[in-house]
Image (cartoon, rainbow, N blue to C red; front, side, top):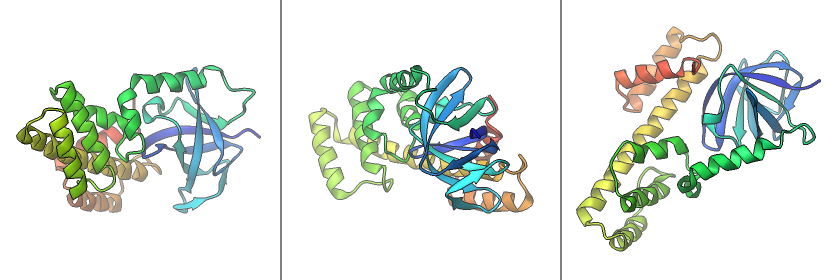
Length: 246
């Protein structure tokens, strides 16, 4: 029987996207390629992990009727549209020839992000770091260099600061401007990372019934405080996580 999984919600995954939903038919195994259908568009993806929601643990396979979370790599989060996205078995014979073309086109549209594709901060947020401010092309390049350095720990090592200072000279940036760019980038990076962590936690809590229980609300409030997220921002993230309605 063909595996069919309808996506109810999605969340950011450092290698792609986490999709939440229910298996409508068939069985799926970990480490398998799948076909992601979004309306008339089709994309190839790979299942890195499966979490069985009732048990809350990682499993090797799951069957019809189970509410699960699939960790998909090889597909951009913005391509997936909840409620109209279906995940199926991958078959080379049935794959539309435009799958790879569409994914390659997406990469062409974001060429500057390719060097930081493995960052835990999704590409869309790296774009926001630059898009919402006015920077010169040299300053944008410097910001990208800083982001590459802080992707693991959220801060810069002494050796990285040393090399960045050499890059600053090569880019003809003043020490003060470089310092502003470094501090601003680190602050935004950590803020965005914390917001994504909070939003993912909310999405996971909403999987069962679409609303937050008293216990989940208590735990999320503790998480909000620990991540230093304002109540207003937390409310905005929760609203945005509510089934990702288009």
